[in-house]
Length: 184
Image (cartoon, rainbow, N blue to C red):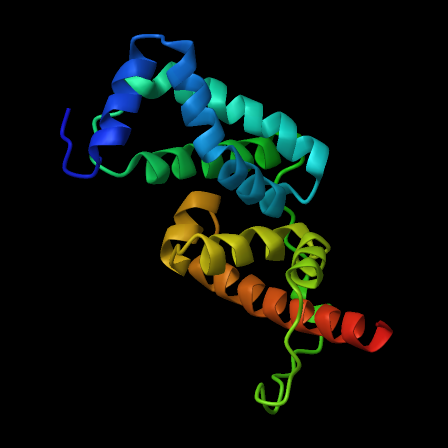
């Protein structure tokens, strides 16, 4: 195993998990469950489904751990499994739906300077309520760090569709947050 990306604790944890030690598996699970759940919850926007998919992710992690070579951090490897699990679920259930953008009037805000800060609860709520295509692309681009050409390949769409859905998602997110601020 290449240990270039693993610290000693993670290397020992991976080896113990590979050998089937349930205590090590519990430690790995506890170490990453919150990040896995939060990432899934943002992608599928449903807590119960995110919980189910979290369990699916860890089943995959423990089954595939023998193939983990240490070419990346353990967290990055688990993140990739998590994102793939979410995208596979979305594709299997109903596909990723991209709204017709002709129906929307896109206007860039004049300034971001005077906008009030929003709470994490408001941001999570607003992201969860975005249309699915916008939500998935916004998560992949802003929160997961993928570029539009990578998103296009992952979702089998054009790069321009990714960019357009991202732009629309940002605008809908901003509008939702502003509405929440007015309502509070």
